[in-house]
Length: 271
Image (cartoon, rainbow, N blue to C red; front, side, top):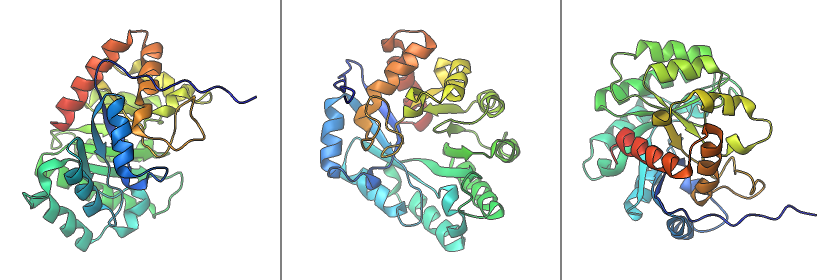
């Protein structure tokens, strides 16, 4: 017998979706995703750039929907794509007053040595150069780190004093050493549906040491759908399940989580 699905709660307080990929959702149209998300009191959303192919697309999406913001950057999987032309493209978008109105961060950047879809040296070069762009434009960063804790820490140490706005280690699944380093450096940690997975005690351990003032809510949709909807395409309207689980793990009431995470998101991304 299949497990009965809970209806998605409609929470009284607003939520901000700090990390998703609207251009990758396939189960319904973009307008339908946004409309359904509005019904669940998700007030603002940030759709994330990952490759040279969607640098302009995420900007177009943010221009289409008033509640959506965007980023500029290449995912570590695409580190091999990073070159002078792509860098110039990012810089042009950041300098264009018509395009940069809703660009709120540089990302998704970082290191992924689990898949290593791009060589490590190319990932490191792309990561460092994009961090410098964030420094030069006084923007926060959205960082991906998987099986790369030591190198992520080493790179970020080099930007400890120059990166003023810091940012977030999104979809946090790393070890406690990276968690403690990031928190000490004034980064936020982003938590998503992984915290509802049975085999993700390491992520819950990281959440337990994360101060409420450093937690961001995200889905990373269309990936990482939370229980009880695993097996379905993820979407921002599943955020209430993530907020509820965080409140349970942190031992505080849901409204506290919603209020503080909302404030964290507004302040980090200047929304």
